[in-house]
Amino acid sequence: MPHESADAALHAYLAGNDAEAEWQLARILDEVALPLVRRVVGSVCREPAAAGDAEDLVADTLTDLLRRLRDLRDDRTQPPIEDLRRYIVTSAYNRCHERLRRHFPARNRLRNQLQYLCGHDPRLAIWRTADGVMVCGLRAWLGREARADGRAEELCLAACSDPSAENRAQIVKLVPALFRELGGPLDLDTLVATMARLIGLEQQRVVEVPLELLAQPGAAADSMLELRVSLRELWADVRRLAPKQRAALLLNLRDVQGRECLSLLPLTRTATLAEIAAAVEMPPGELAKLWNGLPLSDAQIGTLLGATQRQVIKLRSLARERLRRMEKARVRQNAGGETDFPAPADLVSAARGRGPR
Image (cartoon, rainbow, N blue to C red):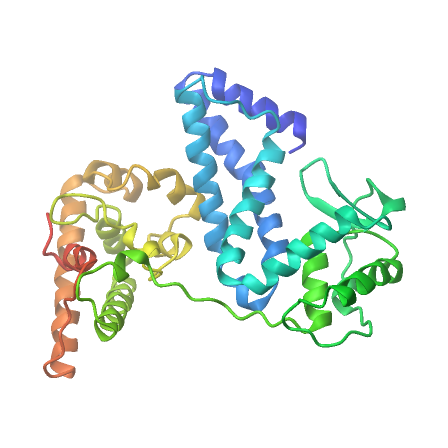
């Protein structure tokens, strides 16, 4: 969808009645946002180590956009979105780079170096396309579109292996040579990926432990490991349930106080939003629309499943009973092994039927 149509859809969403607004919102997410976000995420997360984050980043960006659009409609005093496509692309890049900063710090340092070099070296230039994509090249190419072919991935130039990406002199020499060899500009993330390959920059992922787990009083390392194993086992068990049982359980998941706790799965990196969407047989974008309204009522779940409220309650009861049987079977196999661990044990309890029904 071109800029004018995207902005027109945004205007119609903000100005229309509730039914018109929901139709335009779905159109914006499906026809405008999803293709743009997937393109951005695909260009940034091209290394194998980062590719596993792609679907999660797409879902997270769509969730952010959905929240922003709903806030715009509910509160007209908020700053407007002047260019919807550009806003979506920028949001997707910000999401990607925030994730890469945490998980791939060496790549992030290289990206910062290349962005600075292209903005300050008199031979080079950096500019944005109409969609907000950052493009780099020789100064004479300023304003041109980035190359779309794959030559950059096959290009070989003489370079010393420099995994630390600290050899600025080598980078200053390689970048203009790379552009001259290609004969056209590249988007910034393709340039980063190409340079990382040429200088031998390893993409080792930095693994984070959620702060919520570290903050537990007296939480020893072996207890944290047991907790992660417990949650992985629970998620594996949930995935063995029938599809409608999974949906009835997960979309209504609450802790003992009745609070939503499905979000603990992404928080503890047990399952991504995209994996949860697959488990309830729903497109990630559809689940993202519902995410802020979780837990859903039995009536809402019934509408999604084509079932009555009584049938939804029965499906959830069957799911919990099967999870308890799986748990007992595992305890018998691992004589004396425990299955309940410190918080977020709320998630374990809610799924296995020790929370509100």
